[in-house]
Length: 347
Image 1 (cartoon, rainbow, N blue to C red):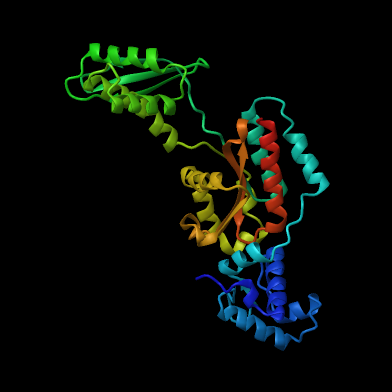
Image 2 (image 1 turned 30 degrees about the horizontal axis):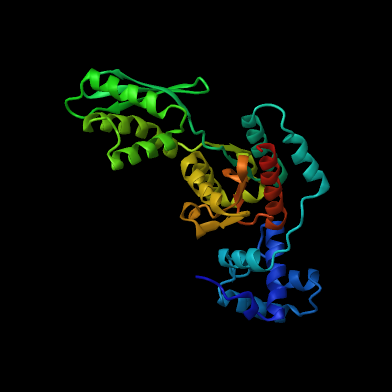
């Protein structure tokens, strides 16, 4: 349930709400009215603070995990705080220097991406995440090897010398000569293009009636190209570092949540799909708890930012994952700066 807009809260309610959230993010523990009156400088009695906290609980911004344990922000409250109240601090000079030093541009870009994941894990005390750019194979040569009357081996040779193969199902009555015709067409007409470009060109030629292939050969060509387009979509590449950071001293009483989160990290394809949704954003995105069904059990948060390659095109996403009590004000600019550094590196 969405909470009230921030401008509907009184100044007193905002002040108390801010202190509760900031205390919770710092300690991971609910905060009581006496603690707030002693530490906040609000010049309010514990009784007045309790009344305000009760009001905030009634509108869904705070919750009491136990009867006398004080209050903590709900996921709705955290979202309101992050979107409307959080004061973001720039990365410290030491953090900036560490990020720029480690991502210096020496060595393969794959090493830099793995380093970025490890670096964010260490700086944030969370698990670091990096979505690796999708490698778009550029076709140099294509072939089919006959396996049986039902299957063939599609072999792709890329311009970088890479060789990959996939088993494809054959339509009925396919012959070896039809396989050879389809392979010759692919190599002669589609070489030098990415698979997506090749698939699009084939579709346009078929629609315009400009291809010399018969229907059976067109089917074979389409099956061969589709074997790679499906594979690339189904197996996103995700680098995860620092899972051990998720098991800290505050996790002792919440081991089931941590276990669930670690299981979610093992199923990298789901996490990768979540990160992929951050590719469309112009800036850092924050996913809090059950706002995303993936974290409905673990109650985790993800902070993610896209990074760019040549021409400013988004090629991947970098971020961190941890409990909802993340230090958002510190980690958001850290993730954003890492994304900017990776973008400069990939130009």
